[in-house]
Image 1 (tube, rainbow, N blue to C red):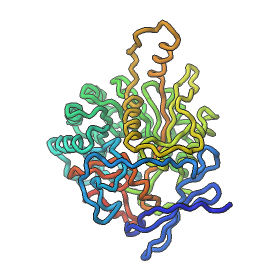
Image 2 (spheres, rainbow, N blue to C red):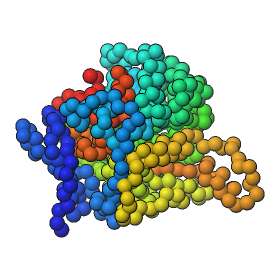
Image 3 (spheres, rainbow, N blue to C red):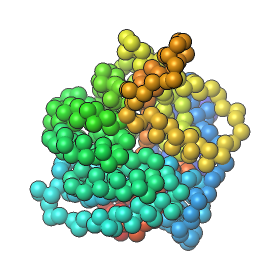
Image 4 (spheres, rainbow, N blue to C red):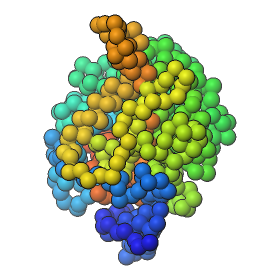
Length: 452
């Protein structure tokens, strides 16, 4: 079979300088191939597919670029060195992440933020409440009002987090989510009640598996009971829960089906699962072997196999917002017998015209707001006099989403993908930086943006 080649740019994993790159497809595998004049050649698998629904060239989706509403930096050195955002960026902000702390109550070996445990390390300077409110106001002006996630570190170690949530709502953010490990929630349900009262819509709950060995490998602690108690606390407070597993082919790839079943068993409090194939950045910038990578189509195929076809590889479709190679998603209704009924339309071979990127961003923002927030269990339609009304009510309560996001590291970074990013970290000076650029880490741990 002849190779299929397309051109892009990337960075050298050793020095982070921009270099030419190619996506080379041979058979079922696509690799990002690049050469640094100083540090030599690099080749990384970015797509492995054995299923007709996820063929690389058919998965791609052309999009008409959409310049962000506010340009904060000029083009000087070129992507990825001018983030702020610059006029070469091709997508609006769908989700903005504000890191309210760089401390944490865990010491996870895998941490994109390289957050420190206050019990074992010196305490980094925390942003003040006033500084964070200023960042919220700046982010509202520059984005026009995207969805918002408070992250860290572990954001719930801040006692004033409910006040920050309330400020975000006052400023006008329509959807506020917290990225959390759930440790404080498990031990302090009153704090969770305060978060709900302040306006938290959803939590991204770190949830890597069901085995003790998985938790110890990823988080240095067996957190299974903690996670169950956190789910109970968030459910009682009527905060929507999205389980977020990091997936490693060497640690927990064989648990993805069990994670889906666990999530269904805890629906409608749990609104879905958002898988994140492991990336090698932050505290974990090791040069990975091919066997240490799991790509999106491989994950989709594992989900079908491990759930005994509860879901199908063909259920999953490319994103409407970010670059097609960054993620997949499928939307379902949970039936009474805990099987899943597909709502999203399976992807066919794409002969479509390019779609405006801004249109995709708004669809993504609207979906997140409607799907990841808590189910409105007490909400009833005006009439339940027919089967359609009953279906609409049940569909709202029993909707369930499965998605995955493949974050890029220095080995897999594709600048074309980066320019289409819609998930932006708010830097301490207020600039918006694409997530994969902000967290980019060279092989020796050198960062491009974080901490600078």
